[in-house]
Image (cartoon, rainbow, N blue to C red; front, side, top):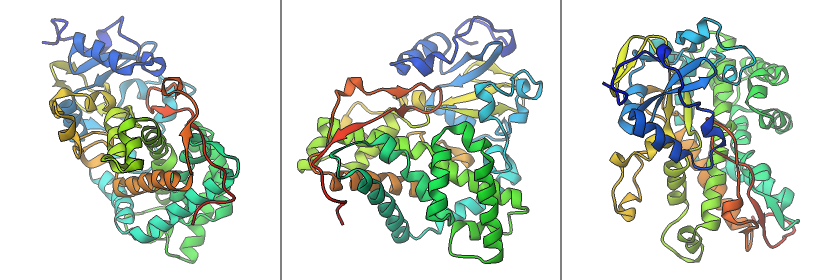
Amino acid sequence: MNRSGQLRTLAEMTGLMPLSRLASSMSPQGIYDELQARWGPVAPVELMPRVNGWLVMGHAEICQVARNERLFSHDPRTWREYTNGVIPPDAPLAALLSPLDNAVYADGERHRRLRSPVEEGFDALDEYQLRRIIERECLGLIDAFSTRGEADLVTEYSAAIPMLVMLSLLGVSAEDREKLRGTLLAGIESYFADDSMQRLLVDLVRKRRAEPRNDMTSMLVRHPNMHSEDEVLHAMMMIIGMGYEVTGIWIALALQLMLTDHRFTARLRGGRLGVDEALDEVLWRDPPVANLMGRYAAADCELAGQRISRGDAVILSFAAGNADFRVHSNDPWLEIGNRAYLSFSAGSHACPAQRAARLIARISVETALDSLDDVAVTVPVDELTFTPSLWNRHLTSLPVRFRPVPGYKR
């Protein structure tokens, strides 16, 4: 039995809370608490008018879904409303559902075949080389505003770094990186739809097939698991997507903590908490991916007392799951080093670039703090705003001032 006293199918439910409330809420955790008080850790919600889904908010329940790809598919064609044409092509949800020919949208053996080249590429990265690339991109961005004495560390810094690093790892030239930067920062719809970006990547694939180099595109082209040019292209788009927005959000929120929270600002004067602790706190408290669309029930089942029907959409709420009291202690000092957060997801579809993402985030934060003298946020913390979104909790801006310098520190 669920908390409403009966088991009903998702299609039978009406009057559900619109999930869009999360996008505009200043206190999303209050909405998660309200849903859990009524329904428990798995709640029916309205995704859009006449389209419902399940929001999974418990830490254990999220792991149960994420680790069972046979029961919860990643292929949006499993979703009943998607295959029945209920969701219009211009609906906001439609941008998240276009199944590319990569591991994100695959299950089972096909998922493992398409994911392993990407995993191997990140596992084989030379950390020294990666560090040099990250530092080069960070210092280049800082140099562009260092003489002004003020900057927005979101739009001028954190939002660009991860994507520029990923493009560099793929072997995209500096000139073409700058071209793609504008496209990718324009929004997720541009990322999937822009023909010029796809043409540039196709051209790069063909060049590397003819003349391989020491980059990830050449590795993908040569990998036996890549069966077509389209699969290579979509693997590249998956890699770019990893740096598209999420790591940039992580960097911005960690910078905010380091510059505004007394526990971390003391670190700059020899205190105990440092950049890694700030990065971990962001992943617990404000995970860049707050809610993840992309699981669909492949068979009838029950989850936390709710009746899940074949074809139902299931949304994983990492923000709610990270707040689950069952994975926390009452001692804040014991929490240091606790990395049971779900911010990289779990199971076979967990982020394959976790090591690279953390290195990008850590070096980006450290470089900004080391390069900008007397840096301070110019507005009160409670006046900082977030971009309205169901999915990613994105700091809109982080305006700072600092002592102007003629160029970045070397």
